[in-house]
Image 1 (tube, rainbow, N blue to C red):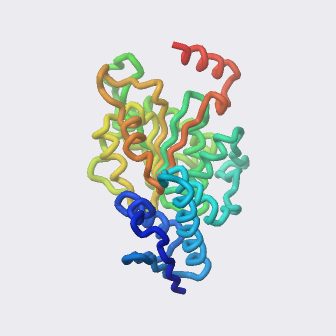
Image 2: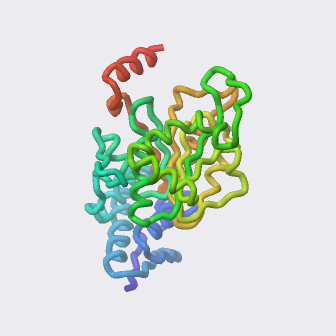
Image 3: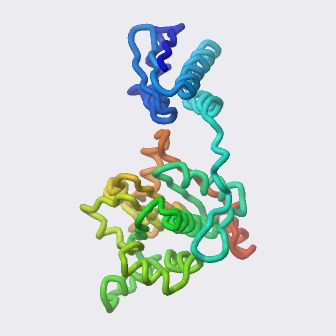
Length: 307
């Protein structure tokens, strides 16, 4: 189907299309239509239902432009939310290899799970106890069980929390095991020890120190970077560019607990700043109301935040 929409205020087309035509690119990616703009028209091609939604979106944006001085990002988000189909098939609870299902306990966790199921790159920030790591591992195991990916990669920077542990004996896995223990603990809740060991032997679950990610491209995988606040901006760039075809990347961290050397910027906060306006990247922040550990954890977080 082909449909042509006339621009009512062609002198404001740059505002309508966004910087670098980012609004048009988002429309094309979100609704799966071809978009061609020329002079005072926008030509839309694709499936009838998608073309109709795209035309409605352009008309809605033009209506907004007539009623305000400037079309800001908040207005664009509102317009997209109005015309995009509801994702009613996204489950709240997800299945894992154990008999139990993993379900969100707060609205923030529910939004986090839905973002991971619908976006290829998700960044989640929040204090301790909000389930950032656990839910990321749950979604990864769910996708492996459903056959949607062939591999899970667990990645963490090897940075000590305020103390130097010195030389650690053993092979690579033994050396990084203390840093990756939280990810292992989450995985053990979702599958048996023997099953996890078998997956690791078959390279279906891989444990990777962040420094060993350089030069790799991971396809058909869920890649989880935990404790991302302890990465540098260059390390974060290196990690994010490892994303391969048909893969999903989940970055988690607590920007209030950075263990880098004083003066060293955190790659997590830097990435959030750089990518916050990217429509295909979900960036969420869980709060103290999403803490699901012992009831005292929320009280402790509140008191330390008072500093």
